[in-house]
Length: 187
Image (cartoon, rainbow, N blue to C red; front, side, top):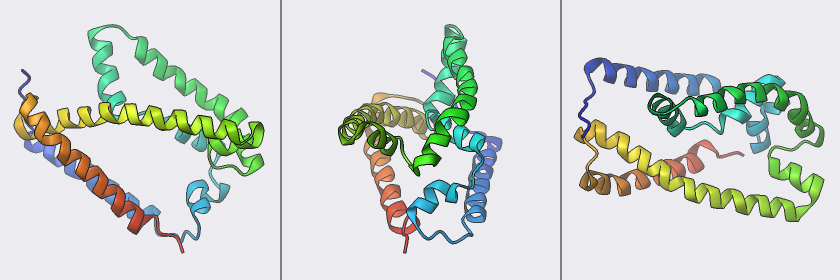
């Protein structure tokens, strides 16, 4: 069993992170956004490299940041090599893919698939994405329960995990509803 607790310094770093996050969210959201397309594309004003890094960053998660170093320490560096190679992919994406999105005025890969291969390809890719998200959600909830259990209970016992699962799910649902009602409201 792993025993750990947050020290005062840990809590200060944790709170400072959220303070910086809240301030930067406020600072960068001061401009008036008039449509969802403008929100998602920044009116096509972002440099290609920044867009490419953003696209590839979506494949990273908290599980990646926690799991890859742990796996590499315990086993080998295979996964770290994979993620370093994704840095090289940024340049490929910036040079070949992002200009195609700008060219057809697409926001998502599904619009690109529909434009190039038709509605059936868009629908099939969407179904596969949803199935993948459903399967990945269980793993993400479990990882979140592990982290919160260590912070609150100093262990990762099964009863604590069972207690945390519904609270994490409810918290995520509440944040999603708040985001949809307050933040993503476009006139």
